[in-house]
Image 1: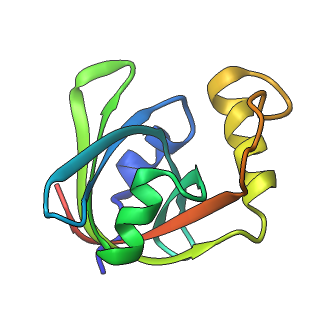
Image 2 (image 1 turned 30 degrees about the vertical axis):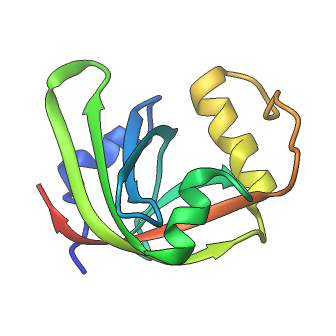
Length: 129
């Protein structure tokens, strides 16, 4: 496990979009733009999704992921992470998407209907570029 360097923690305090790469059942890459968060105490990237979405199904079968993000204020400043999904949890996922909505949309609550349930994908960084 490799921590995210301190000088990149600001990327998780502003509306930075990330792209998460997973592998489908047949081994094809699947790339999705996502809102991204970081738990500095646990040194884990956090992605909030909905149960049953393609990326959630993919990481259940194969936990290997790649994450790339570009600083919204400087497109030449980026962070790339290769890691593994350590777990999926629903506990606190609804509150977490509301927190992300405040950062990304400047609204108190996530405005889209939840069709199944929210899931937090916890990613352990193994390589950081």
